[in-house]
Length: 231
View 1 (cartoon, rainbow, N blue to C red):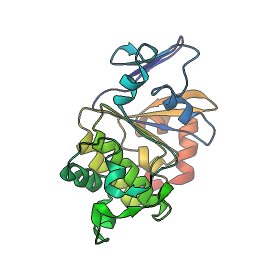
View 2 (view 1 turned 180 degrees about the vertical axis):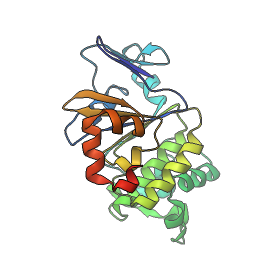
View 3 (view 1 turned 90 degrees about the vertical axis):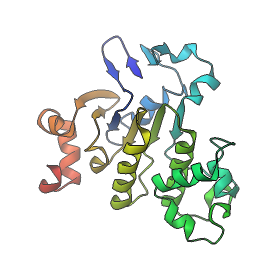
View 4 (view 1 turned 135 degrees about the vertical axis):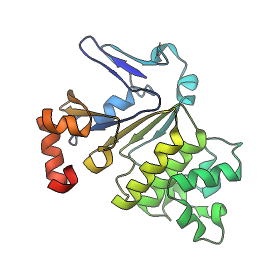
């Protein structure tokens, strides 16, 4: 996937994880919202598989994307029916595998009902972290070529966040993975980090390169991590 404008071009490539980081209001969600066409680019273009997204039907485009929004949303039903929202024909084995990768298997197993456990509208009867993990599992059930996680790990503790990202890296294979976050710990191991400031790209590179070249990234990183963690 590639976003192209008159002045910049950046590629989000299959098999790579690209992280987008910046302060609140820097434009992170706006950038990723261009991919599924929540709105259209006013300058330049967004290409998926070399095709401008505006040339694809909404159904065709969104079939290619597993999108997990900032606010995890669940529907009344069961855990299983929520996960199958992405693929009605998914097997129980596929649901269990997705839950395991999303670090949701343990709390699902705590209930005697397992995947048949009842979920209230909006997920009111599960915690914020559990909602996030089930939303991530739902995207994994779909197995699309593009995953977008829009600040989808914010309610997770750092241990769960780390375990989920490791499992996700193994599972997504040749897929394009885009992670939007404010957490430097979440982006450190990304293949590519895009730094935004007030709607502008101010840095692109690895954690190591950005620590030496991007003042905005340095400020974010040093405010969150110790000197040892920055290495």
